[in-house]
Length: 259
Length: 280
Image (cartoon, rainbow over all chains, first blue to last red; front, side, top):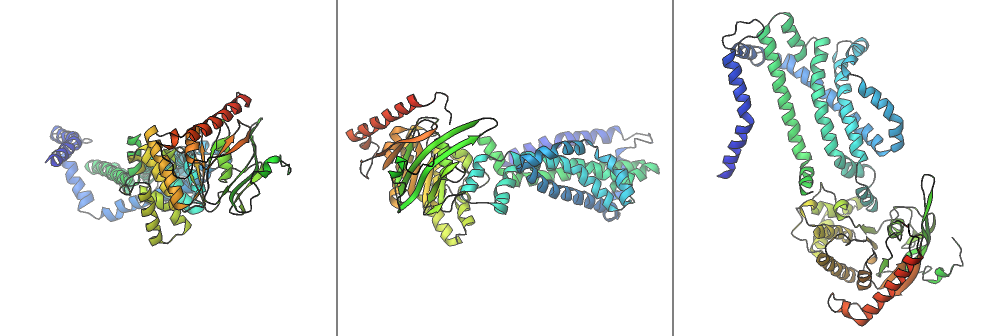
């Protein structure tokens, strides 16, 4: 059964190093008396108490993820609309490029105090910060992708009178999808960072808020458990993203390999 | 350029029953600071169901001409009339097969979807679509390739898909822009025969642009010989080789040789007269 064998081998490759690190951390920290670096065993107990057998799922994790999702999706919609527009028109691109460069250069985190003043510590400001941060990689990649649509495919669409929305759906967005997905991946990781930071600054719930709260109350194992959870969420989201990629970009991988 | 008394006007450009008419087509590219006259004055026309090859030296503005005919480019002056209607933008009832087969198929769609797409956009009902796609893929010898992606196929097979897509569309006029220039010689001969057989079976009107003189004589009922750029029509040669052509026997007929030599001579003449820096 070579398929099972290769499957096992793959699992081995993926999990070996994490398991080794986990075991090392567990055993090396077992006797730790340091207040700031508690034994992993204590952290795991805190993890269970804080995140699994409690209602923080509903009060902190879900609100955080909702804000991340909302900010990411808003940014994606804007990036696609603006990206198609700017990618299709050289004139529009030439005029908007300096402004885009300027906004991209602004670290999204400095928008937090600004938005805090404008919209308080409600969800709006945090979603806006996340959207602002996610937008640039997605927008710039979409522009590049749309700009790079093969001229012969465009001609083919013109010849067969495929125009308007059909053309956008069947040609432009599909042809640009490799770049769009690259932008989404970068946008997502920026979004996670901004989710945490915005909650640390200006929130009454959420993962970032909770972690900083634990730190301020010297609940160190709980703080570590929050960091662990953020790592796990990050990995889960990136796996989700890869799954999406595998579906949307299957053709792209194949075409690239075929040369 | 629009001189109505131009002598080329007699060459059938005014045919009332013509399927496709090209009248005094003239195209100048206006670039940054310099203008290039690509096509000076080209007129010819095709009857319904005719196959005409357009041949010329490299850099003869063949691609420009074809893009004007297909409505992808707007001529500076002159006009193209398809089925009685002036072409302004890609017209209904026209299909084009490009040279770069690898770039004209949608890599994210399977073969079948590629062929079906224009029909969907045209609003052909589903069951009719199925028949057209099945028939055209079978006609090009790809009835087992429906589920493959284009990039999983060889170059010749990809060009067959492009041809299937074009014929499934049931165009009035099919334009082919050096479609076999980048496939190997054996595949090329097969594809030439495929085009001949599809043409005689479906009765479609075909403009076949090529730089290959043998190919033009083998395929066409007429060969329009173009000059070097800025392009004019040098000669419109009738190919009286009969309808049943065969790679082996037709190509060794004395008449084939005569026609080939005549067109060859005209093209040499065009090259000598043409500007040395002409580019396509």
